[in-house]
Length: 263
Image 1 (cartoon, helix red, strand yellow):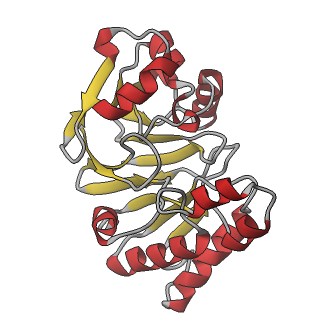
Image 2 (spheres, rainbow, N blue to C red; image 1 turned 90 degrees about the horizontal axis):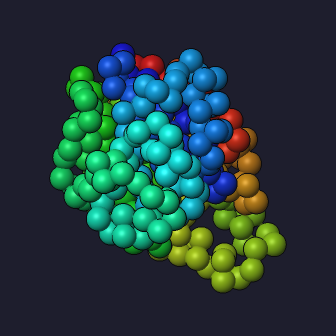
């Protein structure tokens, strides 16, 4: 049985737990090591069972706890070479055997989990999402997305479970208190995905067969969990797809664990 749970997701920190039952990994470690350890305990897991930390990109809300967890628990960290170059100064001293360099779009394996990274449009050195394959099941993590194109959608399709960014409500962002350069960055082609566009992508993926959706990386300032959920729900209903009946739809929270998805 495959387990997927968001421990933290948002602009203040990200960490996703994925387990095949035999192998368990974390995607990103963007809050303190202590908070990640405590969150794992809340879902009945232990940091001692974690085989790897897999990094999407070098921004602080994705890496701040990675170095300490690697040193404290002897956990290897996986990332592509450009991300390593960008994040290495912020992780502290690591043992050489805990530095694992991957290649974008080239599969690698951790235990019984096969993993493929794919490019994401975001303002980082070489940002990626990930497909995880366990027992013919596909789990996808895709956040920090500036825009959606056919290539990206191709990486998302046929997932059984997907955590997809639903960062902001466009009207809240435009009328909010952020300075204009920051608003432009978030709305730009290498910024973050808004609720409306996420809804269209989720509806498309649901039509293609995806059954489990978590909405992630919500902005603290420019979104609400209820608003993100309802916007995406409305997009599904327009396609006659009913949450809680046809698909599972929930929010990955900024400051607490999500529901555990087991498939």
